[in-house]
Length: 110
Image 1 (cartoon, helix red, strand yellow):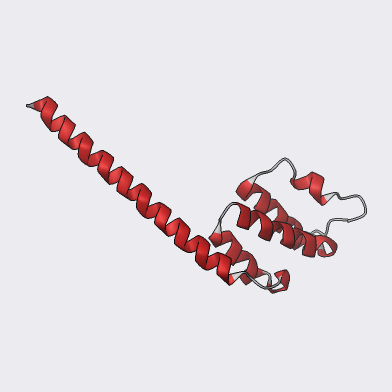
Image 2 (spheres, one colour):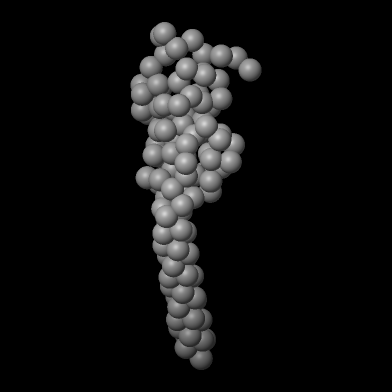
């Protein structure tokens, strides 16, 4: 594994062009390869995972990097329930649309 020199490396500038999951992936890449910037990169990755509501990446960070600190269990539970309710709502919307489309297709065929 190649270690990145920190004297000339600007972490903020490095991740600035990226958003969402790509930004988190880049921050974890830096955490793996640059020991001096590891704490900052992990902190920024946790913040980005929370901002994007990506509970899977959030959990992965704390499983893979024990030095990332303490995970926010309250946020995890709240976000999991929110995402689950959003998924149920979207599935309901899709089923409603399918049913109405099927009825309309049946009417057109008659």
